[in-house]
Image (cartoon, rainbow over all chains, first blue to last red; front, side):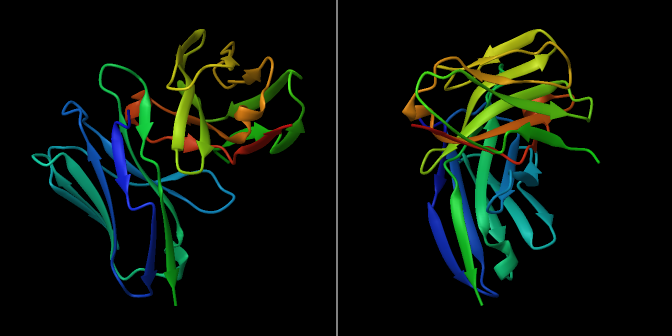
Length: 112
Length: 114
């Protein structure tokens, strides 16, 4: 059973556009929601993270929007650039364990 | 330089031939874990360790073993590899809050089992 559902699987955006990736979860005890960015041939790296006590977190062109009632959180990339082309993963640590659950990933391609 | 290293980076082997993928971190992190990445399935946790001599199963532990004899090392052992273990493997480590903290990933090991 997928505990963190991520969509879309792939996304094509023109340079300057907005990229939006969504994740939904079932377990209301999740309390930390990181996003990881992975470039081809590299390991994932933390991009931005949010805790459920805030509804939004912004770092440069990257924003996480968190909707606690809908049990969803989204990554928005403003003014998308070709250098943003990568695979993005949402994640959440499973409560009362030390397991980390990842979404299935979104491959983003930004064309000039 | 703070990093997680994995060896080998690429490995082709045959069914049943025992192999070990090494993982080492130089950040004095307590939490270490192994993941496999497969198309359409994302990253799935195999095993994790909160500290020396403390290991636990992730979501897909079947066919794998790990050990944590030293804080910096966390090798992944495949006693009898099978073709369904062909995958891209990542080791990761974090400080303090374990799964609830920033994970630092290694560069990956691409394993092919024939």
